[in-house]
Each structure stands twice: as structure tokens, then as C-alpha cells.
Length: 374
Image (cartoon, rainbow, N blue to C red; front, side):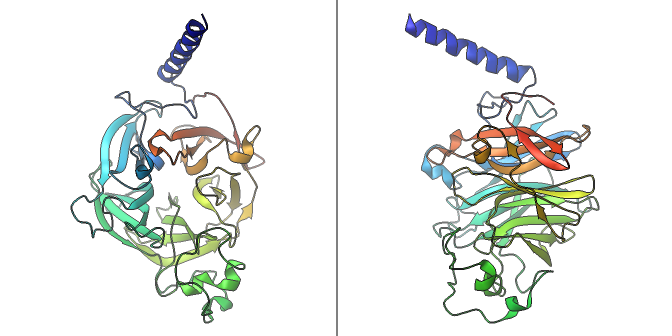
């Protein structure tokens, strides 16, 4: 009898999930199937809206811990309503033939984002790249482009940002000689520096070789100017870099924000003329309390607003980490927080936490919802 009861509970739960999906509901944390009936495989990703269609790009994972490295590439899905998604295949494939390629199979390729350049008519993808078998020493940005939103994207190059350029808000002490005891390579992330990042001067250390770039995002402003936002200086400080007009490289103009705050999973969006920032603390795969901030100018003073999540499990951002904020087209003041639940032991099973952003006193807020619709 107990087995029959459990069966019926499971049966009706599955019916509920199916009805919710077919009745245009978003169910955070549950399996989200594509048009083939397979869980969407687009982790750490972002969404591009182009000519009436949303395109969701993300890391394509495989089963087992090896899936934490890039064995396939970047997946792409398309949708017209944000509920039902069509699998468009692999937009950017890793290189399986050349082990010396920057994106050789087995590299670490994370947080891919795509933006569209209205001048060149190209779709441009950026991602955080670590070279195969090199751990997290490379801290590079990778760039690829395509004539189509679904690809195939052609890998262009990878590099460290802003080699030989100082940020707009550089301080005199950054230009002083760096102490001999400062390690030349990645030291391990949060807590690895013996003092505040400015006293150690990682910025000055990496001036000639290029600044470190890890967790990242892209943002296109109203005037078409594109920016790359990434964790830098041993993950201790966020950089916001203006891209060239073709979106394929750095312009040399950038700004340091939140020095010594150790932000990851950064997102940036604009609402009513103000710039908003949502990110996480630096705790590896483990979830933590999110952070938020606001600024009048993108290269200006940023004011932290605290954890946007409210209620039960808010101190863990509902067991997720930020990856993107999507402005919904045609919906007034409608923004969606996109987060990932990481499962490093079996990364293909990672779930997605999509929640509507509410604004209270011009501050973004997140409240858990078992299911919701636009």
C-alpha cells in the first residue's frame, strides 16, 4: 500500500510539473526540458533577444566531474515566449583536433555571453577561458563571432584584458614598483592575498601582461557601447571594460569597482537611467548571499544595496549563483534574475533559478516563487 501511495504522489507531481510547463509557467529549480524532452544544457549562460526571438547560450555539460571542463562547447536554445525552448545545437565547438588550441577539448570555458553588433551585423561571444591542464592560471577572455545567432561561432582569440593600460580611476600607488614577494601567478582566490588588494597592488603586477579575467558578463548600453564586466586581481576586484566598436577587443578604457570585495557571477543591467549590479560572494561552487549595487554612471561611484534576496534561504540566494539579468521585451519594467544551481559532482544535472526582479525604493529584490509566469 505504501508503494502505491508513493507511486500516486510521484505520478501527480509529474502531472503538475507537465501542466505547469505546458501552461506557460517557469518552475525554478526543476528539470526544464527543451523541445526534445531533454533537460536544457546551458549553464552559466545568458540570453540575447534578436528580431523577436530569445537565444539562450550556456556551457554544455556532460555527466561526471569531467563535465566541469569543456568537452563539447557552448550550447544554444531559442524561444519566442521564454517558456518553451528549441535546441539549436552547439553554437561554439571546442577544438578536438588541435591540442595546442586555446579552446582545445578539456579547457575550462565558462559563462559564455553573446551580443549583437548593429554596425558589423555580427553576433559576438565572449567567455572566461582557462587553458587545458593549466588550472586557473590563464585567467583569459575568449572571443568568437558568427553571422547567425545559432552559430557556428568562429573562435577569434583569447587574451588578458587591457595590456599596458591603466584604469580610469587608477591611483598613484598603483604605478609604483611591485614588491618582489608578490606572487606572479594565481594564488587561489578569496583569502589568498596577505593584505588588501590595493596594498599588494595586483593591478600593477599585471599591467604589462594584462589583467586577470574570470567570471564575466556583457552589457550593451543605450548608445550601442558594449562593456565587459569580469572578476579581476585574484578575483578581489571587479573591472568594467569598454569594448571596441566592433565588440571584438578592448578599447583600453576601464574602471575598477568594489576593490577587495571578492565578487563573482557579476551581472549588469540598466533601469530608468540607472545602472544595477547583482553578483555573488567568492565561495567556489557553494552558494552564498548575493550582493547588489547601483550607480548613476557606469564609470562612476557604485553604492552597494545589500543582498537582493528575501525570505527563506535568501542567505544562499535560494541555493543559486547569479549569471545574467534579462530585460523582457514588451513588458514594462520586467526583469528576470537568472541563476544556476551548480552540481560539480555531476554538472549536467545543474538546475536553473529564474525569478522575477521586483523593485522596492529603486532597489532590486528577489522573492522565492515555486512557479510563476510573465
